[in-house]
Image (tube, rainbow over the protein chains, first blue to last red):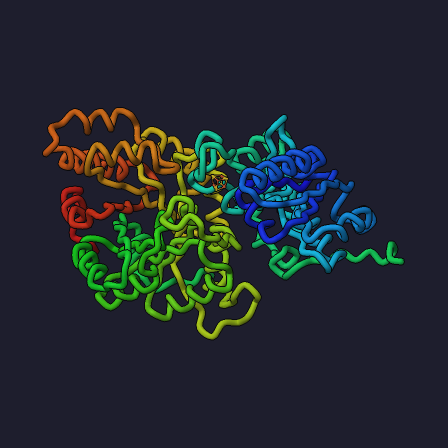
Length: 222
Length: 307
Ligand code: SF4
């Protein structure tokens, strides 16, 4: 899923300051799961903003709505009426949702209320971890299902650096050394020979390095 | 056929000699005089001077420029190059440029992560890893081609070094990684500072059993400790460093004015022990901001005059 974190209320306040009628639009998919922008977060943020504005003597009307997925036009359209009633939209979706909204509705500004952080998993309740950088050329088969491009702080593909100690990354003892994990996993799988093979430089052409990417599925085009 | 580079370090190692190199960190500024002063202190007592590349991710005069200053003084440099700050285009270009300035040795590294440095908000590169860099330099030297297969007009014939850390984890894997670096093209290996001799010996034994010490020159890293504070700092704060408790106690056990002297003693004992280990073909002295002690250590270790 896409993981994100709601922006601090002070920043949100600043972003919406020029407007008196604001729609806070949540998204019911990824950001809901990571407690950044689902229906509940929309409600909590709306009340907090109303309260702050009231104590500061600022007039503001806040409308709340949440759609299933802000990254799909089909769901976005449900918000059309609410959008037309407001001066600005504060989107609590990921960056893709914000941009999808901005593409669909050109009359009102769409403002981000969430910092989109990474593509990851819910490792345990309350802990989300980054697992994939969407590089466009997946090599997880070689690495026992652990991605060094994403999870090694130096994107090393031919083994760990000299800073790996006791399973921790040199960057911080809070971070697992991806290479430690890869080696443990390959040992358990009896696939350590994978690591004897020299891996040539990664082809970053499939990554964001070549500019924004597109996926074309002609069989699904209308 | 393996094409020879043109340097002294390679000659010493290939003729079966015991090599001595020392480290020189470029200044945080543009004053070439600082490099020359360090060079003066090291000239004649080492075979080559290893110049760091923005070590610990702190911005300094470029390794290439500092190396070029040493070349003009008749000192042979080993240019460190990290993959943290340059993509493959810049790396290859700088290797060619460096060789054109008379720099004949390279040490290929990934580099300390930028979070350790003075500008942790920088974006890192890591387009290729240090293993890829070793292979790239080897291909340039032996095939005369860049990474795209383009025939170079004048191939950089660098003597290629890589790093190994016998003290990092996972231990068993470290020798496998060494083998891979040798296959990729490393001619010499510079190790992390050796304080834990037992672990270093165990690593060397594994390397020897795999036949690796026959294929590569291993230079053991040594760093004299100047103070108890430095010993503790290295033990706890430097990634991948192993300073046994006993050594710290030994440093603590002497009167303050004698601590540096004790550090030099430990260093000399370490060098003597390293010379006894089969497969160790030299030492790399990293006397950080203490270059004036190098001559004394090399001399008292019985390693002067240099060939
Ligand atoms: S310690 Fe491990 S995860 Fe961290 S940079 Fe080194 S190899 Fe990568």
